[in-house]
Image (tube, rainbow, N blue to C red; front, side, top):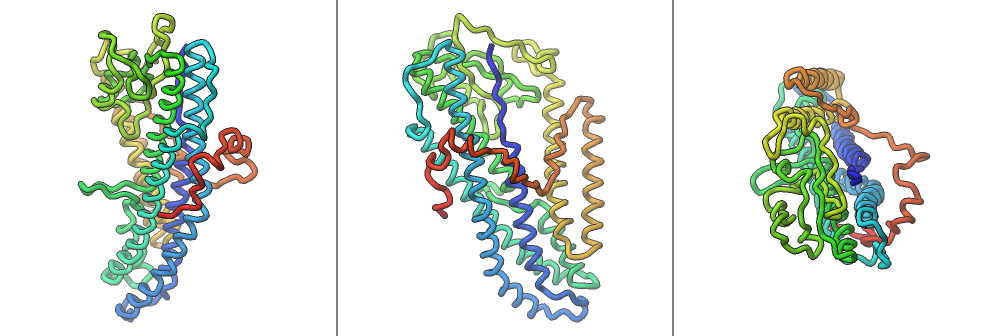
Length: 398
């Protein structure tokens, strides 16, 4: 039987959401250093000069926050990637009914260490981008507040912050104008790297066995790009030395057509052709689909899930705005927006007619870490040698 693999990036998403939350709280601290006063008596030049004086101190505070979070981020990302590499090796041994005599040390895998370094650069670049964006939004908030007609400076700042921070803190800006939050980008990068590490582990082991077939997992709410390949048998010519057999699609062809896209949930699991049998599709996937014909219910669930996730992101950002508000009116306005968004989430399921798994933890802006019960134990750190694997991230700074 083929066991499906599920990613374990929930804790990392919570960690990065908390980091974004604290970045915004720091911005609020330095906004509060501007003395509250009636807007009628505000000297705009004085306020702007004071805000400029605060920028360097805010920058130092944000990088100090990064220094506090970086060891946790490093351990979380390394753990996710390392355990998936190891899982890939174990899966291959299990599926191919044996155990290769050749040992696979994580620290000796050049491909794995290269993947870790690439992941580190992308995540640290995003973190630095988020810090820069938070400082930019600090200045934008003050400039907008000075042009906002309210009775007090703090009230004007809260109104300005609700607009400036509406989309949260952005970590990455694409050439086409698209922007991605730190939590969203880190989650996507880690999931992508985890998938790659699983495939690297499987590929290394499949080369040891000389067997190159893989099974593409099936998921509810699958996107149109992956749907033609899920629950199919392919030949791995990407992470192993598989060759065309005239019957099965090459993995490289499937990838070129969109499989394993950014943020993809599918995996390629080792498959012993002639011995293994494909597992049956889950009822909610196979109920109304034959072959590659689109399952309408599946497509509706995918769209509904994406809408819910979008509303949850908005709720999380509004909670950060609420908790950083300088006035009671600012907190009340944010609470009203949160209630409105929660109502929209409840309406998605009734409108779509399909079951959507809400996962309410995605709406938490700040995650409370339990130091007595860490989600990555010292045993995990020692097992995968996370201290040495991929170098020490805390010793680097882009």
